[in-house]
Length: 434
Length: 198
Image (cartoon, rainbow over all chains, first blue to last red; front, side, top):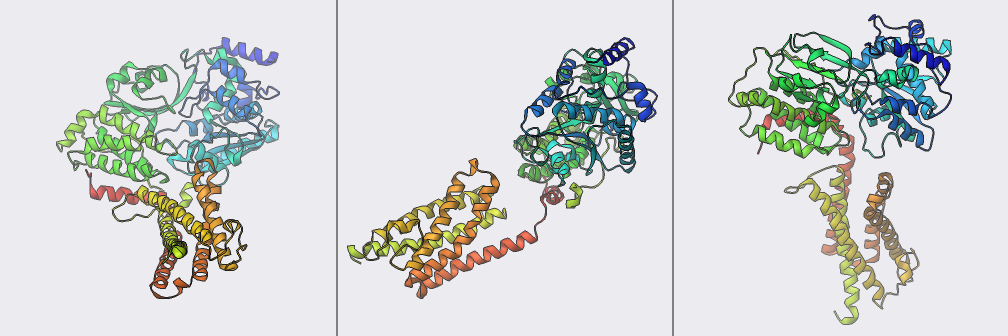
């Protein structure tokens, strides 16, 4: 570690290490390169592979894409492989309820790009990609950010932008690898795992863009600074996408271990349930949401997870079954149709759930849903069926009273205006996956 | 039929059975490939039928070969089971049978080892089945005069017709194939129409 880095680390650690936001600019104004360099300075290259791994391990950084896998283990696994690795920054959040990656790329692109370079140095990669959705303005911004960095000589490896199709599964690791190779963003069977054989057969490090930005900060300010917020087991902060019951919300950076009720302001805006982790996540009852913190230590025992940091508080005037059925139908339509259980099972599940929502279900509907859920679980190439039935089961449990009402052809809601965002249109053409 | 001719008849009979079985296996293989159904059978049973009938074919093929060689009238050396065109008797027609046997053996062995092979390898070798079929038919018609007339000719024609039909179906279906993700909305609409079925 150079003296300059150590100084920066100390000064930063002294000056409000617990202050948030860390990733997003405090002013709210997007950080251009000069602002970024003024605040954070240049990326602190370590001068060789693996040099950063120990720092990341002490920091305890985990993947922010949803799986919360320890980042240092992924870095080590990729660096250990034979062959020259490829690094891909994953900014293609397919999750309709999540905006945090887009927001991060828009507001702090240079942290992500620093992180990409540092990760590439750490695993010894010579090819770096950034995988993002086709938002023309965001792409333009990233292109100009990359050009600026090239002109300033900041990047050691040129970053190639790859666009993702607007599909739920586009950000899944194997779908990403296939897309970066130039093919359709369809999930593949694993093993081989992506870190062993990913893009064009090369060992591939896929990291969520927020993970990369966190890595860029840790490499500057050190593990102690990183651990100044968060819990012992799950240190640091994370970007969350909030949807409050009053319709407010947005992307906020919060410390892991913060009570779920706080950012959602549940005391002010009561909710009938809280969705954590997105559409592959789970519903919590108001009692659970009031008691638990945003941490996997609290959520995993309930079968839920922090995931990619989606928190949505369902207003009391909506129907949990109707909202959930819309989501399950969306998820079924987002199936890549590659595996039988997903192609045949999810539409059947979605249709029956929709019938329950519409008060035209058979008496056996709830039993059928639970039985079919077991039949599709762990039977896909990717986790799409597993995530879908996790969401469905939590809905049937948390909205159990509402299910009973619906079986009696009644509903407690006063409005059916959609609350959870559902993108329009399902894949109808091969190009939809490219 | 005397004991002297028993082997000869057995060889010809098992040959005809093999031809019929080969045709059935080919048709079933194409159905499996197109993920088709047979009435009253779940999909996995079609695959199972394809596999088991092909193993049954191996058994009859074994009898066909052993009886042909054991029979003293036609002098076919053991070498001819592996190396084509080494038989003194009907060198060309028997040789074609050997070629078909070698191809078939490759298909069977790779299928038995399928779990340990790269899918692409298994697939490439499995395509040889399409090469072996016409060789089998020509071998049958050439080596046996029985098949060239009467009901055995009709049977041969029927099996060839079935396989040719299946191949045409495969070609046409492959052209008309809908990508599987496009089937999902159809499945959803259908599931909603049928309602929740017990």
